[in-house]
Length: 104
Length: 416
Image (cartoon, rainbow over all chains, first blue to last red):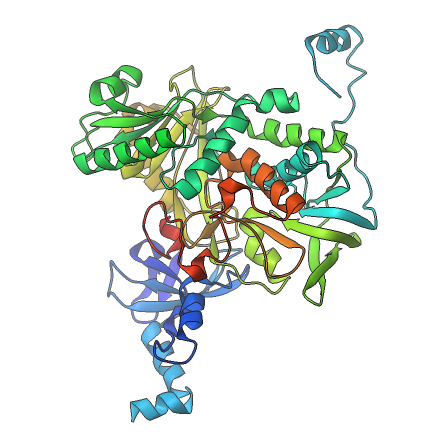
């Protein structure tokens, strides 16, 4: 499989280490109400879809960036890759008011 | 239909006209006591044990393809009970005992061949770990032997004992382990279940569950609605997909694992050899093909086929362990979809939905579990309480913190 790295162009998937579902970017707040259940979901529960899957790959033998790769789990077709940092920052920009308060 | 020497002789002299199909192809009835979703090894074993051991015969097995079209036809046929944790070991030892009696039980030649398994040791640390594992196995009655380097060499002299990176220092052996014929297991259980009145319905895909007030009433299928008092799901790699239809998320990812067979060779390998350090294991089938495999491809997949880098990795592992394998040609290879759980151990449990039961998360150890998985799942379905050897294989063990993590690798399914 070739992963279209946003900075380096197409790279062999062998250079990467696979982590799993990209929902792992959204780490729950450990001090919030119901944190135990939220962490149980975060650590253990997965959608595990047959079809499009957004997932985290680490470019371990390259520029050591984390990517969010969109891939079809039935055909192994890769439809795109973004820097995980960009995805996380974009999510923070549209996050809940409470988190924006923290950032200020 | 039973098989016997007399029957084979009689059919031989009468032109083999008396053989009949081994099971019926019935249309689904409107309602059953228990529906098993998934006509693979575990589903058919469950149906067989429900009928044979627990007296429940108003049972249907629904299979979306043909019998044994999933992982029971995509494994490397190894049977063993060399686990460490008590929550697993007693279960797999029960399975081993059922394997030892399988052919007498089903009157079907499953070619159970107890030729032994050797897990190779390369370091002092690994020897300590295997000694501990061997002790755990002996405590569970499974039996184990710690082999010295010379004892390993006597049994399998063709291995590369002086590999610079992973020299062989010894091995852990379970002599009762071995291989079985996967199709024979499916057909034996299917025929046994069918003879006792179980309806095996092929080409019947479950497309949804009918659930009202937290209780399951039946399943929607490609052949219409079928009612049931209880529904047991045993669909391996498709677990997340099927249980999502009941609104459940599971603690697992589906991954592809590849396996390989060489051309047929004269008897070469006495039993099963595992080379954990090199991610490689191998045995020889009764037809003579070397059957081997290695690691998962490592990314979520439902494709039933893998990619070339892992093939190369497995081949390198084989060359490192037994250089003579380089002279054999690869005949074929395939991929199966493993329901990899977050701790690498299976789940046999009730769900929060009344009447819906789940059996899955077998990772890449499902084949050896086939008899006990079916027996224990049947026990749970029939009696509404877990069999004592599956008490720790609960669905809520992740939330409660009672993981069964054999390798101690944490919640990372592709590492188990």
